[in-house]
Image 1 (cartoon, rainbow, N blue to C red):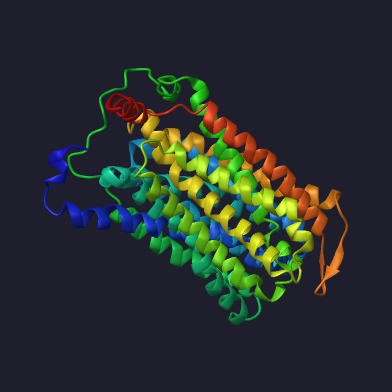
Image 2: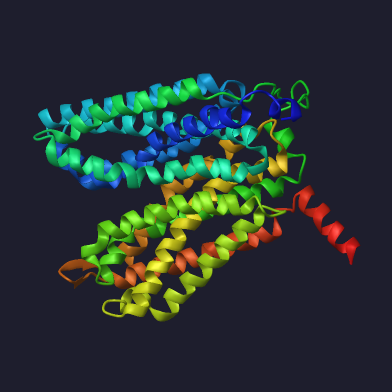
Length: 449
């Protein structure tokens, strides 16, 4: 984006109306996918299936989020209006369809059709809306806020993280006050609300006047050619460290409520969950804004992994989860780990698009970002499941404060995550090369000595 764009009338006002506000409308809507734990048990009970059977709907949603972003990244690149409209329709239709199949399942308890319908609507259709909706505003934000790209993308992605904190109490109120069948009524009502929000975002979203895609692509040039402008191991390193950060985050966060009960804070689970969501959103905004001040954005990932390794190691060495009940110091340490992992989990998301743009330019950023989000798809299928498998195979269930918990199992999850965090840090330092900007700054510093 050049000076001509910046000098156009109303630029400083329009960047909020044309980029920031529509991005928040889109991301605050689709981010409610993380409210799944609020109503998953209600869905299971209403349609006559186990909670484990219905849980796959959420896993499918995250999987198809990543895969639709990967396969539809080029659509976003070419036409953000088409992609944001697809997102609005698919997300709202998926929610409405989920509500309809829950209603059907209530009439026909144990119906396989109801369960499969929920998988298709919440998992596949909503998943497409999630992927395209997540991508659509990102490049536009980076174009409008080219000097503070991290802050801009962090603002939108923070909306995705904050959506759970905002929507959870509203959803809980609806479940408590809509009477019999409140679960399907909630989905039908919210499908209309979120369609209005997302469609408004779709109408407002616009790239800056005067922006033209760089004329750098030759006929036949694909995404792989762009990635090959640097050693392919560079992109592999970015993809893997993004995947590991999500996997570790999901592994710990999926056990968060049980860990909190384990250290004797069962009565504060709701408050701690909200604070965790705030740290998640704060990490998305804070880490990305902080990265704007750095010569190499990859430094942020090094910080995230080092902090995660230090706090995970501290809880392992002190047996913090196992010995935390009644010990204020260990409780604080365990909470510090939970909040830090939440912040790093969010920060990992918000820094990916800007890190990729620093390495590969803005020309194909939506498509490259989309492919990179496939890491989210696979982490969605592995993070929770890895933690569940470990808890089911290590330690034993005991009662703390009247709740069945497995302190040894949760401690063992930390052994897996710390190993993965160490691998991610090594990849971050060895495979991901410094950007040209970082190399120039290093050369200038050396010359000044």
